[in-house]
Image (cartoon, rainbow, N blue to C red; front, top):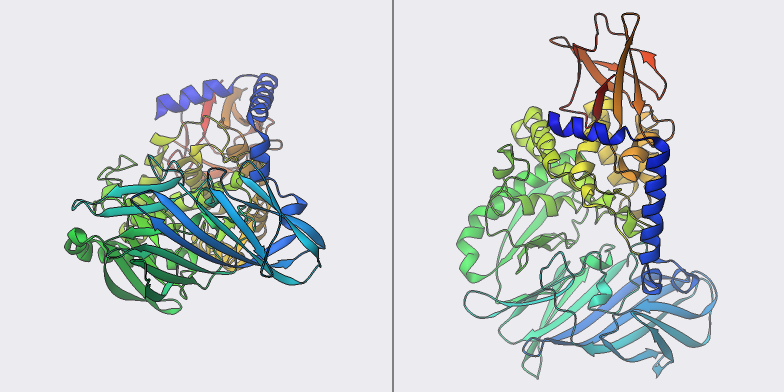
Length: 556
């Protein structure tokens, strides 16, 4: 790691002017790549903000042999202003059969993956209204879910259909008509999925009804009582078997439902409870109550690796500890627990309970959830184990581009939002230097923004207010720039001085240093040279707390 730190330090010694010009050039390049379709998907125009979604009833039939879907989605909404036209979203390869309003078909137009409905009269501000979209077609097939979005059509080991949806990032409109923007979560939802006889569908929330249809299909009606973001809505179709358990948590008895293939049942009965209950214990301690008691907690075996589908977590980790048996940190701690169960369930708090308003703030979902892994380890094996795991995650950091994406064009940031974000959050905890206060902040985020969508400023502002410290420049440096801040040491007249070299304006991060063999002490360098007020400190014996800080250093 020392070689890597020196290399990164050398990179950041480029002049600020050159770095800024490169950043501007990269930004211009990215802007040139964005299209009209990106804006339609990512921008909140008046045609989207004019209505607030209250309820969906998604009713879809899966013809698995033909890889074909057909059905409808009912939109119930409250008008936020007077309007006669609105936008919803559905990928262009799926046909809109008709849009029905008050029993009659109404006019609509399409522009790529967006659709625009014109109503026969003005819908007035504050009124509640509804319309239904009927659609059909062959949806996009996900070749390598969950990284590419769409529907997974596979078979299990017995040759029976094994089907799932996964659409994070690309958007739920890849398989169903919806207002496809993270900022507007529907308040509640009915999900009705019809599948060929002999198969079962497992979706979000609680199973309300199973109906045998005359055409040989079976419809499963699932009701979601809590707000849910679009990409979390899921259909999982297979010859599932079910077993259940309960967990006594902070809000009482939480139902635990497990849906797996018959050939997986015995493995799942041992593996799932051994991971789920310690996970719930750790995360309720650090983050507060599981956010969806009304909808329960489910693990559902899927033909892809995993995804944080609210109250129906997708699981495809082959009943192995680690990430398909591997330790992401290289420390050994990552193979003592099932990565997919812990990580994807962590999203129930960060991503599902607290959801970013724009895909550019996907770091809110992934940084906190990746950090939750080290908290899970800490809760089970001690703080030092959690710190070692968190440090080991640096092996996967690329420092290739900013963690925050580009707003209004459906563009998330660098994959460093996972491990670099987790390492960064541990630094914030270290600077606060009060573990109970830090725990209170994590729980406070989930209480204050319970079932809400948030912005970058919401999260940073909350941490600033609750900690009593100003972390704005620190967040700015680590999330908006790819380079690491460098702590430069220099000597003058037998006195040691230091300063930060960083891109963020007014960067002044407190950091722990020590004379070799001594105890760590906090110093607060700025971008101006200032004396290191530690007795006996020299360039030869000063040490940075690299276990808790991800920075570069330079001895001038």
